Length: 229
Image (cartoon, rainbow, N blue to C red; front, side, top):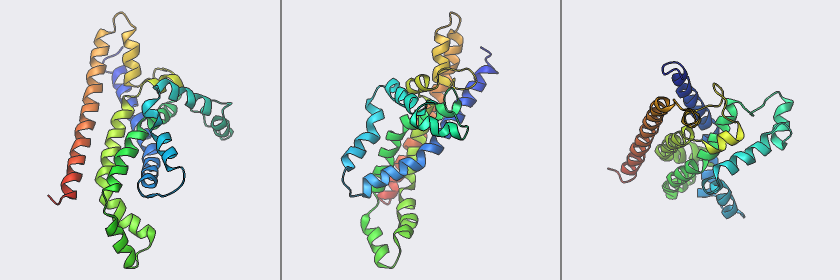
């Protein structure tokens, strides 16, 4: 493995997959978090359980379910095939798998952030004539933003470390779906891959540690802002 070319490309692909996964997951995570934090509807407990299911399922099961759904003859894959889109063995499929695996962590972080917003502030704004959407965009979203950013960073850290669902759903294709975890796995199978494993593992640890430090900093900033410190 080329230490300067091939491994740099793997890191770049990993970052690309992580960024795409967050672009997909963040709007969905915020919507689900808002529904779980503020919604009152039948089946809320079931929705909560479904959202957090990827946390307790073996990742290969999640990947298998994605494969069933998005295979060319699957219910969602057939719809995408009509417009010429395929996720199988593509980096976009790896991004989808990473987004699904990161979603529960993001929903939980954003939900806690929304629940920390004092409902009395929202109620006061409505009594002053602000509509529901204006209250949402001018009060709920700004006050929960640090938690949303923390969720984004934490989700990114989770997505760049995704392995089981990705390899089950889109395989381990060099240059297309082979992110850092999959590249490390491949290097471990090689008799002379120890050096590559070390370099890739260091890169993976550095990226994950930076993301976790950023998430913790944002969480502490949110806590200080909540207590007026």
